[in-house]
Amino acid sequence: MLTDQELLRYSRQILLQHVDIDGQLRLKNGRALIVGLGGLGAPVALYLAAAGVGQLHLADFDTVDLTNLQRQIIHDTDSVGQTKVDSAMRRLRAINPDIQLVPHRTALDADSLAAAVAQVDVVLDCSDNFSTREAVNAACVGAAKPLISGAAIRLEGQLSVFDPRRADSPCYHCLYGHGSDAELSCSEAGVVGPLVGLVGSLQALEALKVLAGFGEPLVGRLLLIDALTTRFRELRVKRDPGCSVCGTRHG
Image (cartoon, rainbow, N blue to C red; front, side):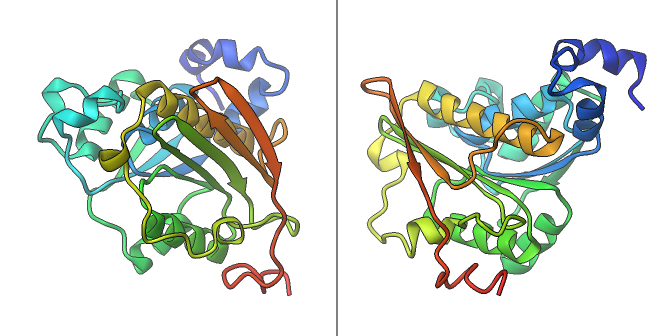
């Protein structure tokens, strides 16, 4: 049940007929894995903690650098040199001491990633490289866990939800294949801070919808954001029956 303190803390959210008491209880009992606590993971973690998601698994092996602070708003100047996990945990505890935080401070290999994914209800990929995204996708397909994937670089952002519990849902590999070795990172190409905040906030929103069971998640759709012109486009994405990752999922 929700305590009187929780009813007060989440009152504005509970007022929504799509959430209500039942939805808030589902959030309280929900578990989410956030892979990466940088520009995308910062707003994701902040909003999920504030919304009352009961257990957050925080995965990042990096430390806070001064160059991160322009966009990674969960960290501050005093965090420089700390692990991103510890910096994030300090901030999240200050926002909501009632939730449980589970740290993953080392790089996740295939086994540890599979184990982490198995412990949660939803996974948010907030990483910044293709190999990690592919590994997270494979783990989510294997465990039949919904994956909320976001990306942002320069002045362009993307967002989609992949849900292997649904027969019609594509996976990340259906959409992007094997990617490109020439993929750039933010440290090479740059990125504007509010863009990663926007994409990360939308990832958090999709996670709340999946966990609380309301609305229409962005499954089978790819949202494209052009920050330069403030334009949004949506593309339909179909599942690839021959996909090497999910192709035999429902076969």
